[in-house]
Image (cartoon, rainbow, N blue to C red):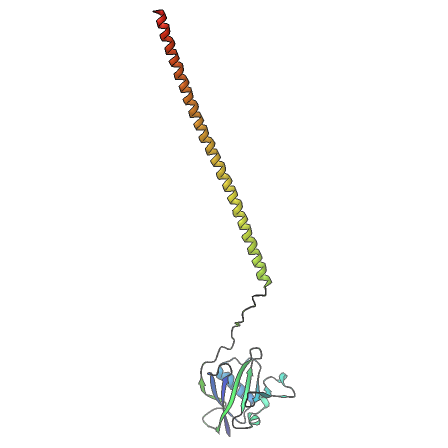
Amino acid sequence: MAIYRFKVSFEDYDDVTRIIEIKSTQTFLDFHNCIQEAIKFDNKHAASFFKSDDYWRKNNEVTLLEEDVDDESKLMATTKIAGYIEHPYQRFIYLYDKNVQWSFLIELIKIEKENPKLTYPVCIKSVGNSPKQYKQNLIQPDKTEIDPIMAALSGISQKDDIDDELEDEAYKNVTDEDELGLNEEDLNFASSEEGEEDDQENQEEDSGDEENDNFGYDDEKKDEDY
């Protein structure tokens, strides 16, 4: 029985390849399951094989799900690989997961005899680590679009900032008034003390003058008595 040896490569990661051997009488479903196992994907999504020409142009779809079958496609489970091999270097394109569009390039590189020690299909060689099946979305949001939720939160934040500024300004005004009031009281108090000191000095001077006057009067009187 003829054994087909295929080279399976990620279209976007051409350094990651798998060499898979499969019997000519086996189906595309067997091929699909072997690829999934070889690349360590979860085999939970739709898939299709397309017969390709030398320029990697797709023709003749063979699909995994029965509901995807139409007049121009066939079902993997009932379609043998041998029916799609037209020449020794036949090519296929394998698509997995319509949402992500994982694309694989498949080339027939050799036709040989069956090895009774192997169970087909089988991956006989693996080169490179497969990329992560579920990649993070790295698309950056358009900065020109405004998220209404973020806009609302931004509005609240701006309002809070304005309120804080108003509170700070009011606190500053009150503080300035208090300081001004204290300064005026201090000034009034100091002025009052100075006034009292001046009055006391004036009283002492007046008292001294009176004493001097008295002393002068007493002397004059003594002279008259003599």
